[in-house]
Image (tube, rainbow over the protein chains, first blue to last red):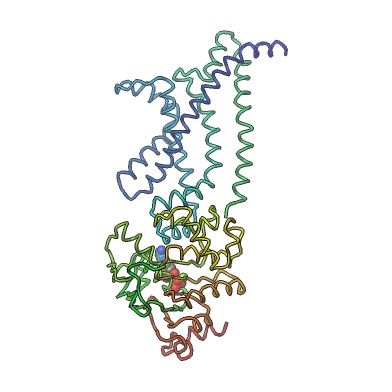
Length: 219
Length: 258
Ligand SMILES: Nc1ncnc2c1ncn2[C@@H]1O[C@H](COP(=O)(O)OP(=O)(O)O)[C@@H](O)[C@H]1O
Ligand SMILES: [Mg+2]
């Protein structure tokens, strides 16, 4: 047992630096992906055919293709089109794409949940469509969407482990490197799993609490 | 309160000419002609599904008519005509609307509910808008609720706030769609009192209602609708006591028997 703890203690700093990168790539993916999700949610509802089709295309590819394929596409595929990106930028791009596609559904469900009377009232008092969206509809929609968005963010942190496939030295990649150097795969992967759990379990509890809180004040 | 295009009492304010509204193949309004003068209070009664709400929505273009013409304060809108943003804003400014289900914004304070359009639509400063809103809230007897959220107010209070919100852009015409139908009778009374006060102060109003006493005592004129048409129209007492058409008789009988 003390042997295991000693091993963990030795490699913890390396894993933490990996975790930092996992968190960073997840954060960037969400920062760009969620606004993209909003744009896509509005885009699919657009009466303009171009916006509708373009949004649908981005959503369907983002949801249809496994995240691993998106990662490999942005890292190995784009260079053949003359766009070479670092593993961090490729990973952010692929995960933002995936985030945009999935969160557009979450946001659309939120928008649909806003009672029609709210849109009518906003129009009747003379607000433009954009003002109605910004001041009335989005704030109400987000009350519905925020808990599942946080839930999605937790899944995204876990999905960022796929970035080991494009040589991004995030948490799981670091664990593999340590494992192959020490042959103690089991022990190091256990520690990596614990690190994910330390973040994801409290986050999940916090999301549930938030959900209860927002639910209470709806209307 | 008034601007340069102010319309004096008794002058024509609203005119609907041969207004039709279809949803798909379902014709909900079948040729509505209606004139309303400034300062007039018109009650619309009729069985549910007869097109009363749709008629109100056609007036402020929440539902654009499929045929016909709506003239408001000298500005005509033809069916099928694409309104510019400025024209639509002008129209929505001149017409206030109160809904059966209040439709207050639940995430905004009572004050903000009343101030929002003043800031966004007519560019009043926050301070100016809030001052006007406080006056309006006092007028409906709810200045003390300014900082609360609508969810904390009773139904009657919410509807009075909704009236204040609809008045915030100094409309020439107020539309009420069954404003007391969702309320207990006592709470309905406080809403009717506010509407009575508005009527006495010369506001032009079109009120869809099942409150026969209100229709008779406050409105100048009653319109009876059935199946997307106006089947009877005239001075309140006359229409309510001596309906001419069989359909109107049956409807009034049914209402009185309740
Ligand atoms: N947006 C809509 N789409 C389709 N049908 C509608 C719509 N709004 C109203 N209707 C139909 O129009 C008819 C009249 O409705 P409405 O104007 O609400 O009547 P009232 O207010 O007199 O009860 C009803 O049959 C209703 O189902
Ligand atoms: Mg109705």
